[in-house]
Amino acid sequence: MILSGFQLSQAQAGLYLEPFVTSIIQGNLRNSDPTLTTTLRDGEASGVQYGGRLGWAFANGALTLGGEYETGTLEREWDETTLTDGEMTTKNTGGFFRMGFNNFAFYATYIFDAEHDLDFNKQVFTGDGFKLGFAVALFRHVQLLFEYESIEYDEVENNSVVGDAYNESSLISAGLSFPF
Image (cartoon, rainbow, N blue to C red):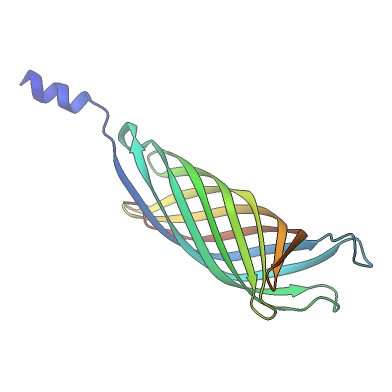
């Protein structure tokens, strides 16, 4: 009897898995390349991203640490006609921290490897950034997820030639996540 009471009072830890899918509500792009005739060029992004978080949950799931991977295909549209619109494929890898409560959770992710490929001309931009999120439980393993993501792309590869890049993106998205 004493042993079972002791086991119940111990904090539980375990594997954490959370697939998610989000749709971009507002996506802002900025190209501040000093070689362009205009110092800043703004644009918009829209589309769907999906991915997952894998980590270790501590303290009965209240605290979780782990890795995150996210990918998606976004439509890019610049405000000025001198830059080419089109699709871009995103791939983001990072480490996340999650603080969970009864019916909601907060997320913070450091994206240490951000990449977007411009499908029309095969340019690959790389950089890093962060993501902040808030989730509200709808059911036991279903959450409504809201995220803000900010990435600065500081390097571009075009036909095996690497150079400096001056692109930034900030995305606000909403979607569903399925934590286990």
